[in-house]
Image (cartoon, rainbow, N blue to C red; front, side, top):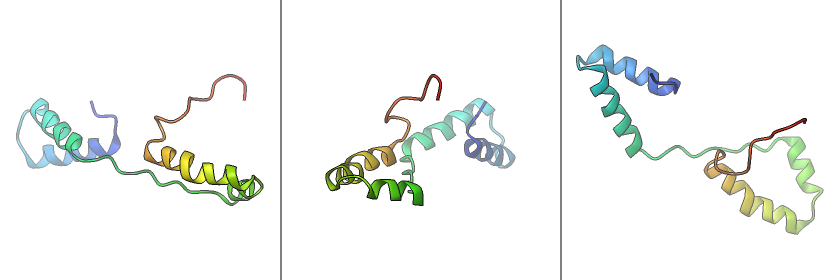
Length: 87
């Protein structure tokens, strides 16, 4: 079953308007979604983070702004590792 809320709503709407087997509809919707590019993420820098960035050297600020933040914005789940252990 769909775990993505948007996909679930889309499937439910299509099921109401179409009379096809669920499996067939699921495959059709999945194929359509694979063809569409994923939306880009939007990063929001908080005031505190901005203040912290200003305290760094210009070289480090530049590297963060032009290397790390764009990579994070392109796909946050591919960058870095999950936090583990005692925080």
